[in-house]
Image (spheres, rainbow, N blue to C red):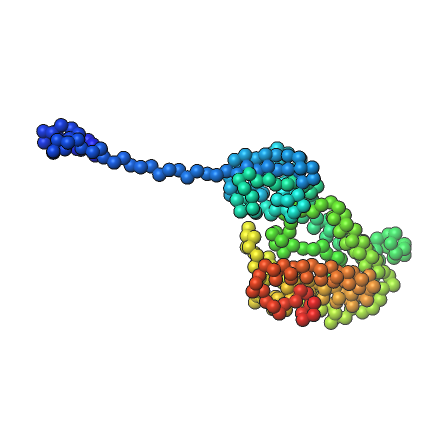
Length: 340
């Protein structure tokens, strides 16, 4: 029951005028419930300019502070459909680094009116297409030489099989040059790959695959298949696979938290005690075993080129680990224990 109604009923029962107390003075009105003021939401304004011409491309009004760069890209696509999010690079400075999709607007060093600079990355190819193109191409090329299709070694050798064990060992054990494999979705750039690097990578992998396959499967190829070198290559391949699985499990699905990789119960991961990138260490060991097994100069050259490139990648990843984690194990080297 309302307080004023109950007081009026009491006054009438006592012969008093409603609204007056026992002393005849006006009774003070009951206090009204105060409403809490609503907290105002501060929206951002986002201005997107062309990084080269400084031309205004888009103005976004009432953008929520918690909006991410990925959400801003989607809003920008609505006004410019030809630039889908994968083609966009947004940055705070025209010559600065691209902002990450997970960056939050209110955490950036900008005011309530933010100015972002846009750069078109060009047409992008999905990573699935990249991997299938770079991986399936060398495999197909290698099989052409292994089965000795016509017009390669001469008519008398068409569709013949080598009598040397080493040829069958290498074809069954090791695939031709493999493209880089991402252990987790977060480790691959989300926008994919530009067609120009894809053409460059395919030229490299396909060309080396044809060069190596020609000599490995040549009718004059001889030599024996050493069990020691074959076992070395197989062990390194298993170790490479184990490291990729460990790196994949290090980051749960949907998480972008970076952690220091440590050895697990799998003995192949114990190499993490000595190097930052044991997957590259195993990869190099696998190709060294493959080169010894085939006794083929193109394979040795490919192994050397691959080792050089993987060393560059390993050093870069090692530096990023040292920069990001203060407690990073000091004993680790990038790719070769105690040396490199």
